[in-house]
Length: 476
Image (cartoon, rainbow, N blue to C red; front, side):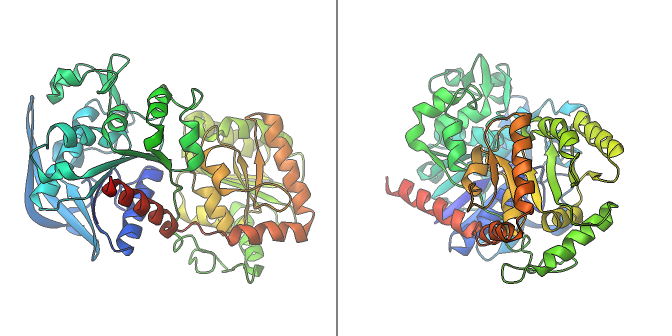
């Protein structure tokens, strides 16, 4: 089948989080299954045009404030997989960030991503690529669902079935209703039941959810959680109303990059058949972190330092946890209060704590390989990737029982990790104490490691589930 995949970021060209990873890996996995994929994304300033080729086509998107346009560029990933870049210097090329800068979100994001949404459909027309499926991702592409229904009725694209994947329901693209005129949206769409209106605002994510044929999220548990008031972010009622069209499909991981048997970053490779290299990685991690070697367990974390990730809970618990003979290595960046908290923790426990603020690919891989336990105390977690990396690297994850963490980590005596339920310091501390007991039993610890390493989280598994969903939509 032919699939048009629209996303605001696509790794390795642009990335701020998991969406970029998915938009890079899922289309590649679908192409490997024999489908023809065109991914459409903006050409941000960091994407060098020298790496791209011209398609010979341009966009001309008309808004009430004037016409916006630019060339359509391309990068061929494989025989069936191509990424198309929408070039527009004003909207994308001249910006330092994808969605905002140090002053906050860009004030014209509604225009920028309306241009992506309509432009992606236009690009498919220009290149005479008539998709069977149009796959949207997060709020930035929500208006494409509206345009497909209301603006392309006379186009062959109108026959396409549409799917929207919600990567994180907390980010919705909510704007004042004055943008209706700014974007030229007809006011009959400004309704709460079957339109774009949301508490007297325009909500791009809600628009997509309302107009697409099917909705997916990035894990089965998260699909259930977002239908509750606790995690529904005021869209739970709409999602419950469309529950028959809502499916949770677990994200995959790049099994080539994240493979301890072939990882070029590691000082020693290892596998489930021979774990000896993991001890070498642990020694190298401690050496690079400037922490004393020894037989103490190492707890690691690689994360975005954000409220969602439960960093405040971690900072509250660690002073008590560090009373035991343990080491803690953290890699991440984000909110200043959490960065300051980690700096203070390192200053207080300099022989037990090492902190790397910022993105450090080498340290991220080394933490996954060298740590004994990996901490993910998330408030909520739509899918999560690091717990899957940890399992693959034989590093036992300690996770809160939420979202994709529940779907990937099994607890109990014969599990693959350690789960805790309540978002509370006592619950996390108890989980870490269970980890210490597990560490004191090498035979049982090895069992946890081996069971985790034998799990298959490759994108092929996830791609087949998307393929099955797409096929069922085309049969309707």
